[in-house]
Length: 125
Image 1 (cartoon, rainbow, N blue to C red):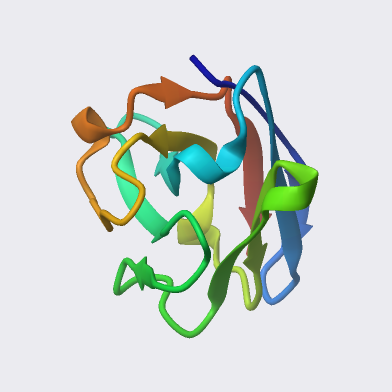
Image 2 (tube, one colour):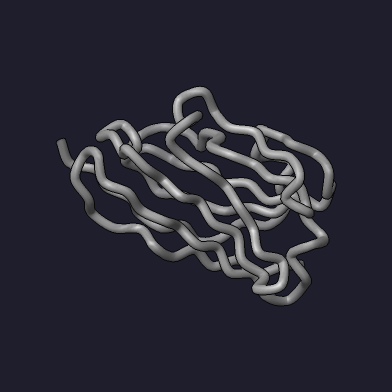
């Protein structure tokens, strides 16, 4: 089981940028495809982005395409989510998650077996 810890969240204004990090321990990150999900207030988890084990392929939710970029550094056992042009509707708790199917670009939370504790991102208008 891999242990995941997110960081980098905070309170920003619309149009600002943030970079979230997800540090892994316990198992090497290259054993997983990695995803980012978010949970807005009062709503269910929603897919944001996913990346294959080697970074060769990515997939994004339509709502963040062109503004967010997922990347990974397996040597550092870390996954990143660069978020630009943030909007108030991006406000949510952001979670990273690990999928043992290394080449799968899943959008389904149920296929990710390990999750971090989440980091809050709040975007003011």
